[in-house]
Amino acid sequence: MGFPITRGRRLRRTENIRRMVRETSIDSEDLIYPLFVTHGLDVKMEIPSMPGVYHFSVDTLCKEAEEIWQLGIHAVLLFGIPAEKDEEGSEAYSPDGIVQRAVRTLKECNPGLVVITDVCMCEYTSHGHCGIVVDGQVSNDETLEYLARIALSHAEAGADIVAPSDMMDGRVMIIRDTLDENGFTDTAIMSYSAKYASAFYGPFRDAANSAPQFGDRKSYQMDPANRREAITEMVMDLDEGADIIMVKPALSYLDVIADARIEFNAPIAAYNVSGEYSMVKAAAHNGWIDEERAVIEILTSIKRAGADLILTYHAKDAAKWLKRG
Ligand code: PBG
Image (cartoon, rainbow, N blue to C red; front, side):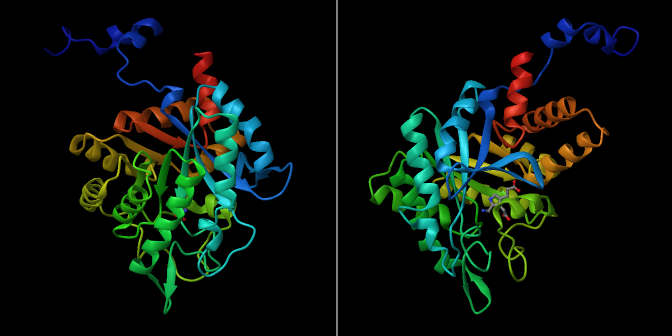
């Protein structure tokens, strides 16, 4: 079956032939656009380390959501920047917190938009950790009930999907139980199941002002060197009731996405994180790479690895380019 009978180039000869045999395609429906919401009025402020990504106040959100919707992107992931931080991250579960208000507003102006909320404490705590600190350590079990309260407050505001990103053990179970006990049996859970302690979150921590004030996140986020452990984490989250499992970051972890695709039938999401975005932006700004081609190649690789859904700050640009075809 080798050369000269087989010639790979036959099916690469024209663009239309290439399209016919293309194995992977991206659709704007696969993309989830992260949005940062902040207090104040009439705010649309660019994040310095993430060109093209903004902080929005609640009153400017609907206009942005309309633009996103028109591009064919039908899901957003909300992050909140609180007015004040404290030890327990209390704005995270306040019914009048920034995310809760943003959810209600988005659901009013566009009931069809799929609103996903990030369930975590790091943006809300004064120490910047993703949980309750006891004796200088993030306490797993004390954090769980806070996470459940946060998720419930998001569901009460109208979130379609809650997305715990903290990496505490057992959080999916307590969130599922709490939602069910309160009548939110239809609120789904997208769990950041295999979330690694990554350097690629740098620009996000600037954007959300959420860098830990002491230590790092290595006692709860996964070691980048571990591949098999990701399967264990995903099995646990599915057993506890996760509807969608996530691998994060995406690009340095395509092997983990591919493993998950083989192992599980559940939908798999991959988070193309802030550092992955900003590297492309910086290189494109310097004229070192072709931004459009690089972004489409990156998103295609994440889908080819096996992701069904991609959370990406490139979503709006990519949707525009895909529309143009
Ligand atoms: C935690 C959270 C983080 C991100 C999403 N949720 C930051 C972290 O774990 O430090 C990172 C997203 C990104 O880098 O784009 N609330």
